[in-house]
Amino acid sequence: MRTIHAAPLLRLTPDDEPRPDHAVLVSGDRVEAVAPLDELTAAYPEVRVRRWAGTLGPALVHDGPLPPAPTPRERVHALFRRGAAAVLATAVADPALRAAAARNDVAVLGAARPSALMVGGRADLAVFGADGACLATVVAGRLVHRRA
Image 1 (spheres, helix red, strand yellow):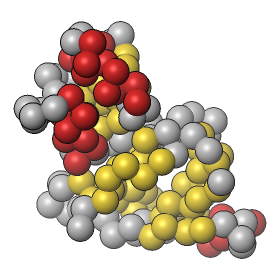
Image 2 (spheres, helix red, strand yellow):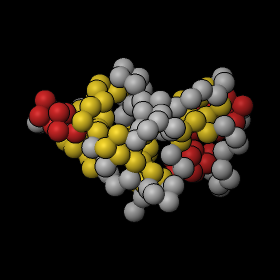
Image 3 (cartoon, helix red, strand yellow):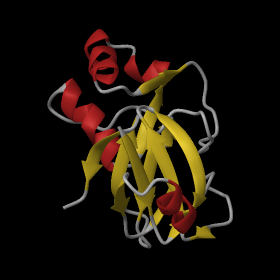
Image 4 (cartoon, rainbow, N blue to C red):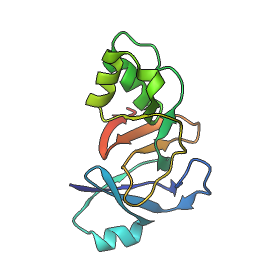
């Protein structure tokens, strides 16, 4: 299923210059296109559009221990509330944590890498408000967190 994720601003990397009125077309677990919103909606008029307030960009790579929580599942979901979709393997060495990460499609990396949105890449997106708070997180094309 395709979805267009749109926001007033879009960054291809966390440090990229923001692009106004751009959007990301997601198909399954992949980024299919990044373009101005009006171009994507014209090319794909039947596709659902999720409009977010804030700045849309790549989900983060969490490079420390997972946030504390009562269960491994809740520790993984705490990552989503921070806008992360990937962790370092050292952070999920515990089998229960690794299993919770796998069940939720969290990317487990051997080494840190820069976050980036790219066509053909995994659809790991996050939306951040002006105050830096994560408003929404998409992991492998699936909405896993939305701030109420």
